[in-house]
Every structure is written in structure tokens, then in C-alpha cells.
Amino acid sequence: MGNKQGGEGINQLTQVLQNRMRWMSEQPQVLDFGVIQPDMSLLTNKFPVPIPQSDYMVCRQLTLGPTNNILAKTQDIGLPHSGSHLHKVHGPVGEATGPAPDPPVPSARAAGGDTSDGLHQHHVLIPEKLRHIEPGDRVLVAWVGDDACVIDLILPATEV
Image 1: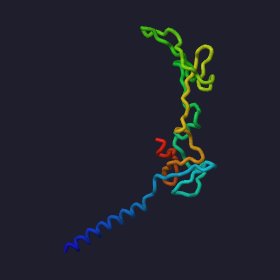
Image 2: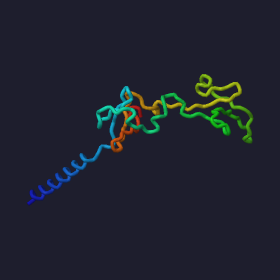
Image 3: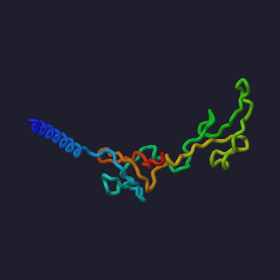
Image 4: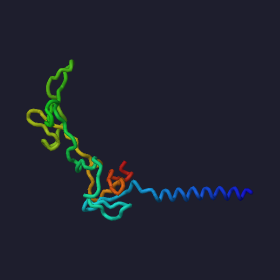
């Protein structure tokens, strides 16, 4: 009698596993890995035919630009898009007493250099880990129906 109950349990487990495997094989894969090819086409694990750059999408953060391009720069209040400003040294009551000394600035305007009147800019540059996609990059791809969308760059865990 014990063997009969054990057999029924194994049969039920087998049916559950078979149903689950059938269901999984019918579900489309949503996430995938890919590689950006030399011509900027996308080659994914799921779809091993290069997808031309014009036929896939990328998330907005992957369009910021190459490393060391300017991501953002300062601006003086009231002077939109100027990027220039002065640092003020404040006295005991919080009143401005004049420009504050700045640390040495890299070459002129290249990284927000000083001018003769003390106006200068601060530039925030795009770091390597936020750059746009390039040939050879491993990427995470989300499939939305038949459309591929590159979500982000995939880096080795050793870079954490």
C-alpha cells in the first residue's frame, strides 16, 4: 500500500513538472544578452542575425555621448546658459566680500577655465561607465514583442 501512495505522489510531481516545462517553453524570453557589432548592429543570443542599428532601440541614458564629453555645466543665477559664475567669500554676517580663491583649473575653457575677470565654469564630464554604446560592448536587451531595446551595458562583476 505504501508503494502505491509513493507512486501516485511521483506521478503528480511528474505532471506538475511537465506542465511547468511546457508553460515555460511557450513563454517568450523577455531579457537577453547581446553584443554591439563593428557596424553598430546588434547580435543577441535569442536572435542570432545582426539587427541593423536602425531597427533596434536604446534607453535614453545610453545616448549621453562618449567618455569625457560635457554632461552638465554650471550657470550663474539669472544668466541662463552662460555657464559662468564667481565664487564669493562670505564675511561674518554672510555678506559677500569678494571672489574666493579656486583650486588650480585645467587648461582654459576646456574644463571650465578661468577668464581674466574671474568668471569660470565647472563641467561635469561623462564618466566611462555612463558613456554611450560602442562596438564590442556586451549589452542587456529587453524584447518588447518583436522589438529589441538595449537597456544597459553589461560589465564584469570585477568592476564593482
